[in-house]
Length: 234
Image (cartoon, rainbow, N blue to C red; front, top):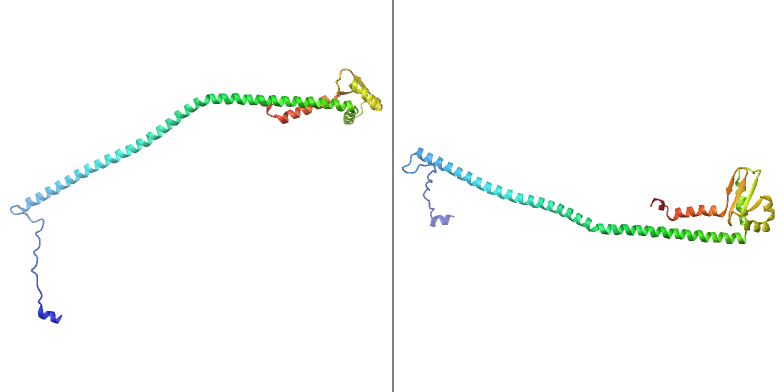
């Protein structure tokens, strides 16, 4: 720095003049006139800015309103159109499905009728085969009917004074040959009115049906309810 001082010298710049104040009156214009012009310019600027802001606000509000109206209209129109389309589609589907529903109802009736007929045919076959088996068993072993008689007599609350057991004529003859003691003990008697397998116990107080037909009817009723318990409600 000592060497630099010997070879160079500092330069001092002249002071800068301050810029004229913005409120300084123009040449030939009084301060009051300048102040009035300044206020007029300020008012004009404010008015112009207000009008410009108002116009821009109107334009922005109009654009936002238009956009909102368009969005709301699109949404409402879509909802109304969708609902109307669904109603129209449901109406068309209902009209188109009506014949199918009729066909389905007829098919269900046909299937129900076929099932009932199949059930009735099956029950008739079972009953027919069962009756045939009963006839064959009683023809081969007529004393089996005596087991039903003994069971019924044992179930009586007291031994009646008068007791008669009626059988069909053919079965009475077979039992008389196979077990004559039982014929005398239980007062077995033939009856031309009773079919094979039927038996009646007549006392002085009551009459009991213990034949195979009665038991078979009870079994068939249970079988019918088992195969189709809802058939009575159909």
